[in-house]
Image 1: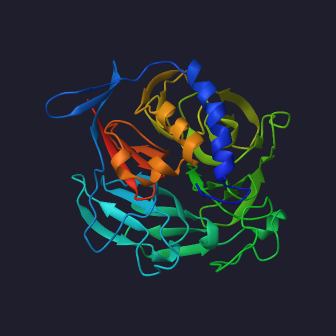
Image 2: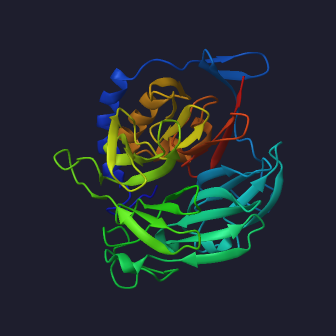
Length: 376
C-alpha cells in the first residue's frame, strides 16, 4: 500500500474510503471479542480462538523494520517477512527469516529495497522457492531460493500488449506516472499444481497474468473497473491479493478486489464464477483446511468457512482506525507505536497459516508489525 498515485490509495482516497467503511461496519457481525488472562490475551470465539503474540519476530540491532508487507511459511516452518524498505538504503535486506520461536535466522533481498511487496513460497522437486513481487521503483517479479540466491527476475510481460514502453525495465530512479493502467506494479502470486503460477498486477494494469513454471508468460484475464457502475464480474479496482481456492468441487482462483471491497472467484481459465461483497479493503488470502483467511486493511482479519460464511473476525479496531483516517488521513496511529493496542490490528496487509493452523499477520505500518496468533 502506498501513499501516492492513481494505482495506490492517496491520502484523500483513504479518507474517502473511511466514510464507506464506517457504514459497512454497522452491518458487520460482532463475532470477535478479546479477553486477557494473567499471562496472555485470547481473541476470537468458539472454535476460532487465538493467543496473541504481538511483534513476535525480533530483529538484530543492526537492522530496522521498514513497513512490513507480506509473510510466508516454508516447509520447515520458518517464517519469511518482506518489507518495503527504503531505496536509499540499498545494502539493507528486505527479506528476513525467523525460526519457530521468532528468532532471527538470516536475511537477504536488498535488490528489492524501496519496493518489496508480495512474497509466497512453493516447494518444487523437494526444494522451497520464494516468489517475490516488487512495486514502485523496483517493479518486477522474481524467483529466489530460501538462502536468497536469485533464479530469475523479470519486468512487465510486454508480449501481452497492455504496458507502456520500458515497463520491462527495473529498477527506476524516478517515474512521473508509476501508477497508470499501462504500468507494471505486481502485488502477489498464486500457484497451480502443474507448475504454472498467477501474478496479479494490483497497482498497475489491474490484470491477472499466467506464467509457466519457468516464468514464461502465457495469458491474462480481467480488466480495470472504475466506479459503482463499472464493477461487473471480471472487472477490478486494485486487485491486490490472489490464491487458489481448493475447498470446493473444482479449484478456483480467488481475488481480493480491494477497493471494490469484495472477493471474486474465477475458473483457472479466467471465467467469472461468483462475487462476495462486505469486506473492508481485503488485501490478500490464504487457505487452511476449509478456512479462507482474509486480512482487511481496515483493521480486521476475517475467517470464512467452506461455505464462505464469516465465522470469525479477529483484532477488530475498525471504528478507531476509521476515525483516525478522517482526522489525520490515517497516519497518526499508523506512525505512532504508542497508539497500537494489544489484540487490535491497524492495517493488516497480509496473513498466512502455518501447518498447525496458527496465523501470522503483517501490517502496513511505518515501523513494521508482525503478529503471531497461536490457535488455542
